[in-house]
Image (cartoon, rainbow, N blue to C red; front, side):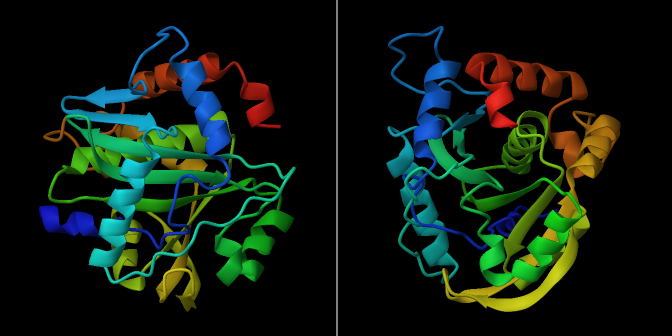
Amino acid sequence: MPLTALTAPLAAPDDASPAASGLAFQHFLQRALRGAEPGCPQPAYLLQRGDIGIRPVDRGRAEDVDRLLGRMYRRRGYHVSPARASVPGACVRRVTLEACHQHETIGTLTVNLDAALGLHAEDLYPDEVDRYRTQGARLCEFTRLALDVEACSKQALACLFHVGFVFAYRIYRASDLLIEVNPRHAPFYRRILGFELIGGEKLCRRVRAPAVLLHKRLSQCAEEIQRSGGLPRQQCKSFYALGLTPREEDELAEKIAGGTDQRASLVS
C-alpha cells in the first residue's frame, strides 16, 4: 500500500481541542501510569516501536495535539469546531492518545465510551446508535483519528489503533466500535480494517463535510489480532501484523489496568 494511502485514516473529527471534557480523567490516568517515575518531565509511553511511541495526552501535551489536528483538518478542508462543553456531574469516559516520532506529535486518536454525554455519532445517526443500544451493545467510538503522513509509517497507524483497541475492549470492555469518516475514506476502513457501512452519507455540521457511519464488533478485532498480531510482514499481510503480538497486548492491558488501579470503575 503506498504511503499516500495513509491519508485515509483521517476520521471526521468531533471537537477541535483535547482540552474538552474528559481531560481530567486523562490527567489522572497519566499520573497513575507514571507513578513510579515522580518528577518525570514527559508522559510515559504506553508502547514504543523503534522511533514510534504511543501515550495518553495530558495537559502538557494538549496544545501539540491541537496543532496537529488543526493542520490536518485544514489540509482536508474541514471546519474546526469549538470544543463541546462538558456537563457538570456528567460521567465522561474518554482518553486521547498521541503517536510520536522521535518525541514529536505525528498522530492522535480519541477513544470515547458511551456514557452520560453519549456519543458524537448519534448527532447524525441517532437511530443507528439506538438500535445497537437496544440490542445490549456496549458502544464506543474512535474520533479525531489523524496522522501526519509525511512524518509517519503504517506501523504508527497500526500501533495507535491497537492501543485504542486495548482501551476500548480490554479496559472499557466495549463490545462494538463506531467511527464516522468522510465517504472517500470509507473504502480504507472497510477493506483494510474490516468495518461495515451502517449509516449513509450525511453532512456533518461539526466539520462542514460529508460523513458516513462505520461499525465493527471488537470481538472480531480481537480474533484478527490473535491470528495475525505482530507476525512478520513476509508471513502475513494483514494490517494487524503491524501491531502487537497477543502476548504484548496482554502485557499492555495489565500495565494500564494495574497502573490506574481503577479497572472496576472504568468498566462499571
